[in-house]
Amino acid sequence: MTALVSLVVALLLLWLALWTVVARDAFVAVAGFVVYGLLLSLVWVRLAGIDVALTEAAIGGGLTGALLLGAVGRLRGTEAAAWSERSGAGTRAFAVLLSGSVATVLALCVLALPEPAPTLAPRVVENLAATGVGNPITGVLLAFRALDTLLEAIVLVIALIGVWSLAPDRFWGGRPGPRYGADPDGILTYLARVLPPIGIVVGLYLFWAGADHPGGKFQSATILAAMWMLVQMAGLGDAPRIDSRWLRAGIVVGPLVFVAVGLLGAWQAGAFLGYPDGWAKPMIVVIELALLPTLVLVLALLLNGAPARNADSSPALGEPSLSARSTRPMPTGSTGR
Image (cartoon, rainbow, N blue to C red; front, side, top):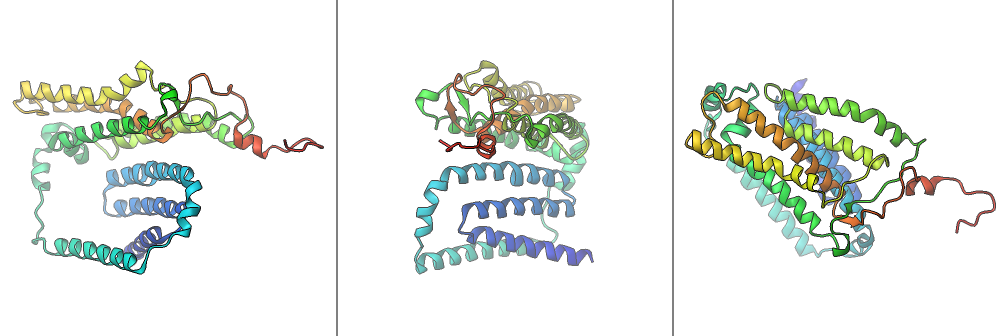
């Protein structure tokens, strides 16, 4: 029965991947991508990769899906022109041939691996106790592959700077994204008051438990950023000004502390990002604590997009949102103008 379920999930994944690629409508393609990411997280659970499953659901299906939906909204005006264009038969045949060739080469590389496949897992398990953490994922990411994790954090900050660089000069230093108005009777406002306390507790638990159990800073930061975005979308809060010193300090504190710990390791342990004996876990905790606000801010601000309005151009809190105004019935005799 388990083998049958695994086969069905694998076939469904392949079908969703094909459907996402061939879909002509951008929104349909993004919807397929989000479902694909959520289903892929179930596959990782089936493979006992709980940390990877949490990351896939939060980043792959959640954050990336939200970014793609935002891109679809911005490209709606040009989608009609794209529909009228159609690639020639030669182009489509070349794309199919290239995709099939890449898939075949990857399959052959996997099949050509020796049996058993080479792995560093036994050596990681042997030396994991030296890190003081019980979660092997956390140990690998912050001890044996700490440089990769540092570069990932730096890349996220650079990506945010790239998004901000798209802002017009007149809005530089302003607030990103639209200013949503609060509808006191709306379900979104109700959820924005009920869910954030629960989400904050869950996010902080995942962060703290990540040292010894599935979880960690990336999963926690995604949940905390989602709660922040929920409050903004309900109109109960606004995005911060990007010229705020506290905001910029929170964005760079994670990589700076990470580099400082690495330099300390070079001084005390003789290697950059090396940990002195008995100090591995405290230093890993310091890195995680510093990276958490950086990841929360970067993920939320990436979803907000580039600065698009001045700081003083926001409607007053309590003013109905555009969606709320558009669905409110007009008075009798009104022309709607």
